[in-house]
Image (cartoon, rainbow, N blue to C red; front, side, top):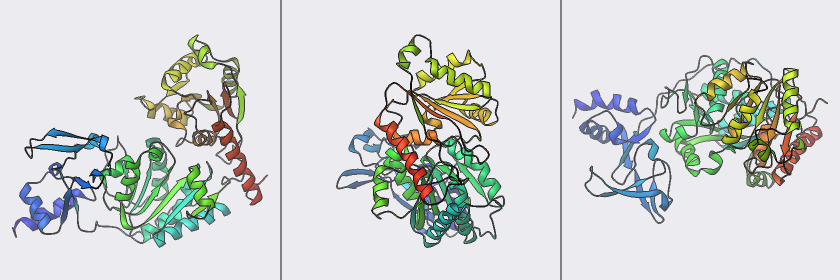
Length: 463
């Protein structure tokens, strides 16, 4: 045993490196793992625990009785209960033992890590100071800032302060497209800082760095890693409807840490909490360039689904697309569902073969989005998968079928927020084509108008 511990325990702890994994996934012998546990180098806990409500999965937090099942287990020789919720990451059953490191992870202090030389507006600077203070106080804060307000830049001073303290920072978001959008910006802002990117297609998953950009799903791998946890787009699907992801965030944080939420469209419950002073928040109702948010225009287009079945698009929608092509102005056209997307994209490709459609299941989605960013695609037909996370300086946006229930207030506000984000192109057209106005459409427009009015009252608009 005295020989085993110095040689095996340190590499075992280093291999775990902030992860919490089933014991059988470790590439070490049972004796080596037992020795490391006895030495206090790693800790072990059951994969499932029994509570007053029934079973609870320690990895994903699932306690829904419908999401547990049993099977004849070869490992323990009895019928084992297992969690179906996180089965895609490997089975967690009653005889599973989860292990995680017990020693502090190595960390690095950075002197003046921020290389960004931009300037914050007065509203941005106020929010940035609030975030920085919340980080240093290890407290919780919600930043409610309109689309295009420059939320990312507001984070820079707080992240720099954390890195100077030798703290580890995690920024997580539900959408992989948002992660991809953020990576080059953070590499440029913090060029000397070790940075890891966690998402389904990344080779860096599980690698611990001083700064980690991750999808919220990938946080299920981490355990007590981050001193600063930032959750961007907290209202986005699936985080907004999936308790497992909120649990993942809570498990990835250290017990003493700060939690910063970012959103342009907080839920109505959170908005009520802010109004009643129950949630600590800073509100930024204007974009960094001081121009008002473009307000959506509602335009009736008839029964567009019937037209689509006949292989046609509404004339006013087609005219809107042709006008963008003539102006050589890039545009998004959002549609409710994948089958409709494929039909619409096919019809528009007859007008211009460079037009493409992308959706969540498209294998070449990343390539098409990059081509759009590069200006090689004039119009991108898409679903709500791209309602956030893709920024192009000078575009217009339309929604076909804005009355569909998938287009909630939040989704429509985010879609409208794609337009006018750049200081050189602060205006643009936002058009909601519909077959009957909905309450969600009306709420979305009111939301945008209310933010513009608030910004005007606070003197944040230049015109």
